[in-house]
Image 1 (cartoon, rainbow, N blue to C red):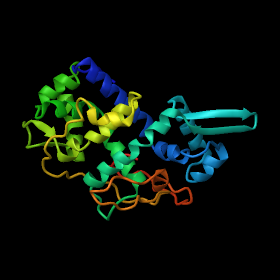
Image 2: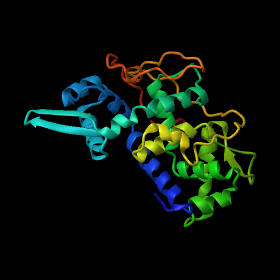
Image 3: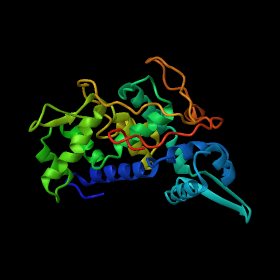
Image 4: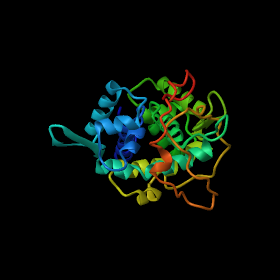
Length: 280
């Protein structure tokens, strides 16, 4: 990650979260991790749970997840190799319901709610925009900030006008608000509502238990919510997933990994969303 003018502790926190997002956001990675959430599987068993992936697509994904320390490859003998969760991946699973809870409140869908796995994928897409984490951190800590001031903090060694493409994208995504050209920028309701998600990702990326997320020095302090967000999630896509059970605001999430990922379904997910929608 490019250096910023943020305090060292904050800069390191953002770098860890950015690295964590880079590990889990690429297409199919979360689905692979969910498929491996039970007992370790042989390659052929995992491939059978993800029939839309050809062999040439699954193998490099597994290799990258092993390199990232999220999946463990165990060679029992020359013909018996299994793949399973590393400790780091097991610790990630409780973060996923936090993401879904945010998506259910803030991501609008044109034709009704999306399956939980698609809400996770859409949410992660927003957070992996270039410079998104740094911009969100600055706006959370400083409130309203001009584009030029943001540029001095987020990209001090670059031309200050380079801040505007990522800012415009975050405004389009509904995470940042502004009253118009030349006006300062601030978090939207959806952007401020990311507190539990970014706090949880920060805790996970630092190897800390999830229950410390509420004490995060930046994201542990929600602001008053401004106007609702305009960002709209992707259309629902046929996918090997199931919706978590409905719940009222008074109840806490009570669903499990199987609610995110149904191993029985084999429908082929659609191709990438056209330009203008989130990257898949």
